[in-house]
Image (tube, rainbow, N blue to C red; front, side, top):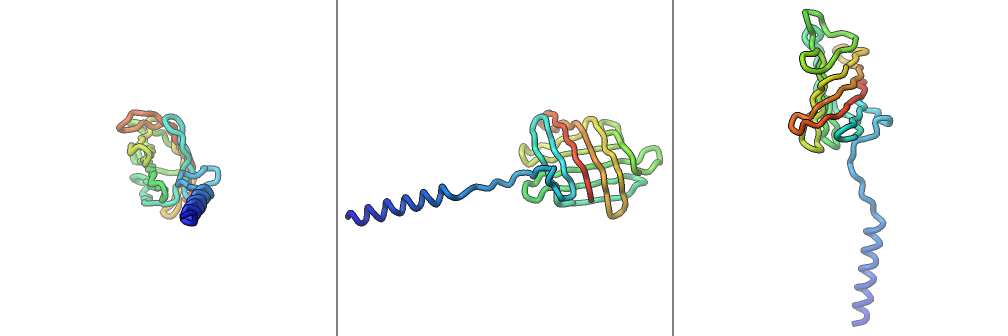
Amino acid sequence: MKLKKLFFIVAITFGLATLMSTKCEKDEPSDPSNCTEVVSASSTGYFTLSFCFDNVTSYSFEPENSISFWARETLTDYGMDISIYAKDDIPVSIGTYNCGSGEQGFVELITAQDGDFYKSQSGTITITSASATSFKASFNVTAKGYYNGEIINFSGTINK
């Protein structure tokens, strides 16, 4: 009987020691300063997060109509959309575009955190290079949650 108790205590001790020595790693968005992926971005305001979008889901280069860029983070399922629309028969080109209601630019962050999507209300998108195969830009917008109405500041750089 004493031998069974001893084995039980040794097993419990070994089990606890094993549990205490393991660590839990959580998949969280990356620090944008360390991001080497396509888009490095961050949000502040209602929530503060850093993003490192590694998966370009679509890119459309039709400067006479629009330039559209979609990306997401593979591990977290956060996504983003940027679109710049031609206006008055002037194609989209290198330059800065305003975002918001009735403006040429549009930025959206789709969140896994709360299932909402945040649409740009004001701010800018600056295109530094764009072609059929590459897109380089930066953005800095204030965005509002579609469902919750909360405000975030969303900014970053694109290097596709």
